[in-house]
Every structure is written in structure tokens, then in C-alpha cells.
Image (cartoon, rainbow, N blue to C red):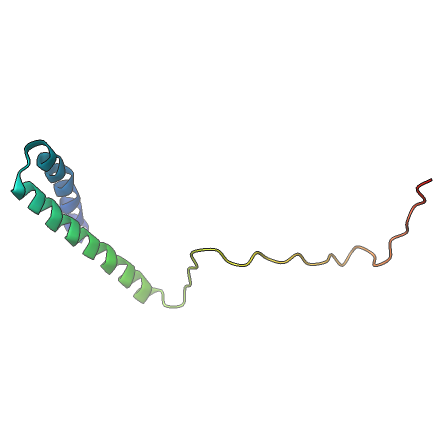
Length: 84
């Protein structure tokens, strides 16, 4: 899978500039097919990692910030100093 992914990546790096420079439909076809295969490889990779690590959880996005906990070392009554 690594070798074919590497070949597909090089293929996209070559075929897309060829398409832009010479408007070759074969270059665009090669680029499109390679991109679709690379997307499939990427999906397969994440599916495989999900299958191999079923108990791991990854949270993406915003979550609740941890709440501040009152420190137990601060006394509950604080002596107020006179201001004047």
C-alpha cells in the first residue's frame, strides 16, 4: 500500500502540471484516477486505525473548559486589614 500510494502521489505531482501546461485530457484523467485512489487509501487507513484501536477516543472540536476548583489550603475566613 505504501509503494502504490507513493507511485500515485508522484503521478499526481506529474500529471496535474502536464494538464495545466498542455491541456491533455489523458493527464487530467490520470490525475483524477490517482486522486480518487489516494482518497480511498486515506479512508482505508483511518478505518483500519479505528479497527485496531477500538478503545481509544479522539475528540475534535470545542469542549467544556475545566472548572476552577477551590483550593483547600486557603482558609475559609480571611482576616480583613483596616484600610485607614
